[in-house]
Length: 177
Image 1 (cartoon, rainbow, N blue to C red):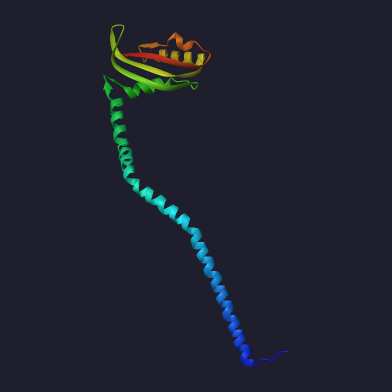
Image 2 (cartoon, rainbow, N blue to C red):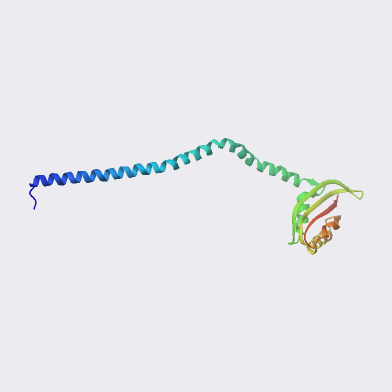
């Protein structure tokens, strides 16, 4: 049984609603505040990362200039390779050597020397260095070079044929001018 008059009941209900709203707003505010505090470390880490990134852009300017200079450097090297020695260019010589290459032979480096003497003749000396998986593949490569007719002398040192597998080799090729 309820002995309170109607106006008092409504005042109590209104007071209860205000207290409920106050508690809910307090919980919401505290959860937003805790969330904000939890996000602060990542905010500081991110700002530190981006400030380092933009301050290092001065250092990156040198590497950017170096990267932008690469095409010019490559062009100068290509001009050197494509320069003619009589009627023969270095790129043509390299492509003739590589066209004779079997699948089992890999090249590590090619050296191109001009105006070299070999048995009293002046010409170009090309040294080819690489690894052959078998002795037969190296012999096949040297015979292909000899039979191509593009090279005056093809010299495979005997020391290149000492092993049966994974032979490091050097082939000296002379092209007469």
